[in-house]
Length: 364
Image (cartoon, rainbow, N blue to C red; front, top):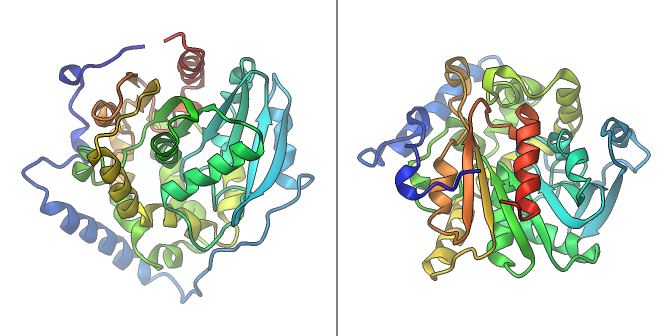
């Protein structure tokens, strides 16, 4: 494990970075990309009714999603659901030891952690959560800013009798994990964030992946992806991997089981629609002179091949996250993992599990 001082961090990937002399182009570029996708697709899309988010409760423990647990070899895992505020949270739990909460990204569910959960469960009480609106958790209309989603997790931990825990978050789950750590520093023993930019922190305004803009547009993404969920989400499941490895067809079918459900796509897009709110909260916290005092680990992917860049742009953040966290964390370590794309726990499970296990045991 390498701790990178600021001067040694590589420059973030040029394929998805704008220079400091081009900030005025960010909004224009995003709008052009989003509009281009709209115009290219709209002529082939029939009139579709909007699909509202659904707050109906997901299946019971005996139903379909829960039958996947036996494939998590090496430890006993069980499914649970608990109501916290306005949302019913689904989580999978197994193992013994100090509590470790895992938060998935988009477009994924708790299932993205499946390859590392059995190993982590040898030393930790692993709790892999489906966050608000996603997976087998319920889908309220509102509450998709990362502070609120973080409060869901804190309330869940409290219901489980946990007063202190470690947390690892990937992608948008990493943004949630950061919100938990800055709002409840006394509850978070150790924090790991995997391959995601943090809104409102230094350098965030120089990052402009096209899908950030598209997913934030009101209603249009729902309209264009209804009935075409897999066509769109495959851009991220396969396009954000290094050499197209990571998820097999069974994994994608499990993701599709929930992302094709009523309101799931809207809930996912809502995570992006709160980016400005998330950024404002992070800026206010940082502006007050706050720092993360707990040990922090960051992991990034190396990047994606040129073919994937042509489809969705570079999704892996490389060293970008490390540069951001150096401005807010006092006890930081991390690295960009060579040969891995965005989906670290699926593409490089052995290395990811080793990094997480050693870090959460305090060995690095």
